[in-house]
Amino acid sequence: MTAVADPYAEARQAPPGRFLYALNPLAKFAAPLPAMAALVFARDLTTPLVFLVLAYLVVLVGSRWTWRLAAVLLAAVPLGLLMVGFGMSAWVDAAKVADTAPVLQVGGWTLYSGALQIGMATALRLGAIVALALMAGLTTTGPDLVRALVQQLRVPYRVGYTALAAFRFVPRFRYELDVIRQAHRVRGSHGGRGPFAAIARGTGYLVPLLAGAIRHAERVALAMDSRAFGAYPDRTERHLVPWRVRDTVFVAAFWAVTAALLLVFWPRG
Image (cartoon, rainbow, N blue to C red; front, top):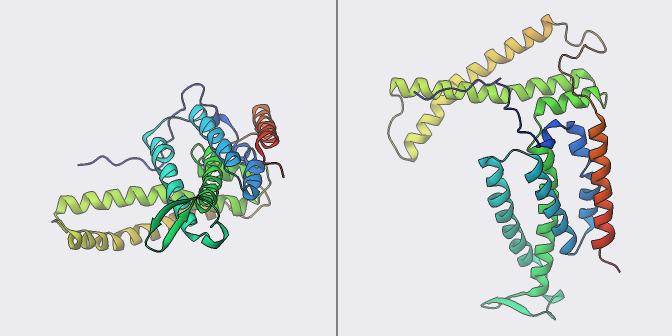
């Protein structure tokens, strides 16, 4: 029988030198914001490519190397860039780039180098923004982000901890789905192969999963009521996510690097 993971198990400690895990979540979101805003208005190939490389370097140096990270950085992002680039190139009006060299011709349709450049510039711009967002997305948990919003940005805890409870539902559903699958496997329910057997197994999971979700929601509601959730304007924090000097240094350093790169690589005229 496959082992079922504890949905509330703490994440592994990051190896030394993986600095992104030690930063406040808000610092990792604030640092790339100026670069992401500038990339919205960039129209060249060099500027987004430089920030894409910068984001890759920060993620590779500051985060733990896992198969998930490798799949995202080495497969998902490059493949997405190529697909979006060629897709955008096909949408460019050929009449506006007809004076550039043709790259591909299929029947009466011609792909010009100008259209390809515009499409790839758009794809690189989107890819750089996504890569910058991965700095926080791959190294920040939902609960820590909610706690930082409540503690640093003074988001009302009624809103923050409601979102925190919603984040907790995701691993709980995964845990219960694993238990239901193992129970069905032991009982021999919905065996066989093929698409119809897979559909039968999937529909067989819906009712027990829905029942488990309702039970879990009732338990969470009772637990929040028993702790007088919402009765007072503020609450004592159990898990602190402080803003440290290193967070300020990281944000300031990233903004300085962003300004320097824009000064050097932003197209003139």
